[in-house]
Amino acid sequence: MKCQKCKDSIATIHLTEIIDGQRSEMHLCQACAQNEGVAVKSQIPLSELLNSLLAAEADEPSVPEIKDTLDACPYCGMTWEKFKKRALLGCPNDYNVFADELDGIIKRAHSGHVAHIGKVPTHAGDGIKKQIAMLNLKKHLADALKREDYETAAKIRDEMNNIGF
Amino acid sequence: MELRKISEHIGKWFSGSGPMSDIVISSRIRLARNIAGYEFVSNCSQESQAIILEKLKEVLMGLDLSQKVSYICVDKAGQLDKDFLVERHLISRLHAQSKALRGVVIAADEMFTAMINEEDHLRIQVLMPGLQLFQCWEQLNRIDDIIEQHIEYAFDSRLGYLTACPTNIGTGIRVSVMLHLPALKITGHLEKFFNAARDMNLAVRGLFGEGTEAVGDFFQISNQTTLGVKEEDIVKKFSDVIIPEIVGYEKLAREQLFEKKKNMINDKIYRAMGILSNAQMISSSEAMFLLSHLRLGVNLKKIDNLSIDKINELFLLTQPAHLQLNSGGPLSQDDRDELRAKIIRNCLNQN
Image (cartoon, rainbow over all chains, first blue to last red; front, side):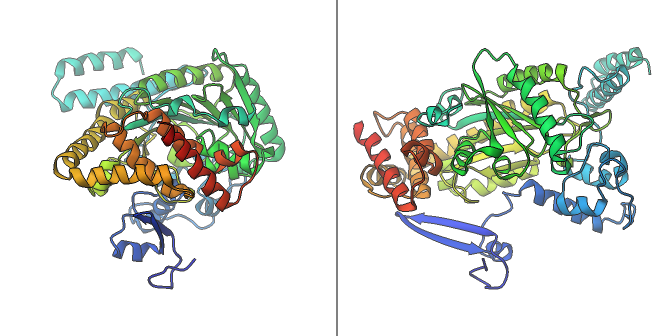
């Protein structure tokens, strides 16, 4: 469907207005909708969010350049090009194969965070559990230091030593 | 599970009860999980999909939830049944449309559902009426623990639970609260609320409506960051800060409307009542729009003899798939609009 205003771009914003029971519909492209003052940014589907993150990736100079011919995942055959199109990975191993490329995307999607500090499956080994407990303590330590709560900070340091890395 | 048996009433989570239920419709938490050693659904062979489906179905159907649990095979379900499940928030639109071998496990009270082979192998969710996120998390976490005794999840020490889309890794948690915000809409403050939510990395979506339009002033607010945060901290932030703050703004907007624009708000409420109790044909979006004003009227104690419960029921039972399922089969748009008007009229004129 073409945009009703510019009659050129594809209409992606569909508005329905009902005034006194009279229903009217408007179909606009993103640019025209913004010109009309219609709020559209509030409904960004996750796939679009990911695409915008991928697009940002390309412009970011600090991110190492991504080779066009990255190897495919030996398990599932996923390639970086294919991922960029579908925004879905093929198997858990892709997180290893494309670790460097995904790094920037993951940071941007998760407010700069890079490591998990939440729930750990019981089947996970002791090493993993310790590692995540450490990350949690580190976060608590930073929080305690930020609010100048040195007593708590000292306790957290003790706990970190006890975990025994 | 016979869908006809549940289609004539509303799910417990939509019952209009629970804390802050005048503004908070429901609380929902879902977890995304995948089985270790398999490809993600969209990249998975049919054979693997079938194995995953069987494995998860067996574990989920064996859960002791102190109530009956049913399984619906979504890939074999008819279009109307799938639309119905989406309208009722029991499956996602993606789950209804996907091509994978897939199904959904639903608890009798509809407060727990598990989608198998949606975007991830498993998406479990707990839904409750009002603001009850801590309770949702407690239950969901317990169910997740039980499933995990039987299934090895794909998990990485650095990235946490691994998901098909990198936007869900870490905890795989999505905390969503559905809110009814008619006064913020009428006073034109919704944009501010959206901006504030965006700044906090939250997603806001309109609910109900047949396409992308947000009708009925229902909005769903959910977290986007799933990595580097603890599940409990997200739940706590939503319960203690984010939602009470939005509820506070909506209440303030309601008070202001009541004080400064009494006639305007009364007009909206009684006009809604007038049209809804007399209309002979009504579209889904017009009904949503007017029912929203009526709901506000009940909350502001402007309308007697009508409960929030009843209005919530009208919202759900007049959705297209509900109408058709309850009338026994597919209906044309005109027939739907006629039936919808009749159901609403009957309900309102009873009182």
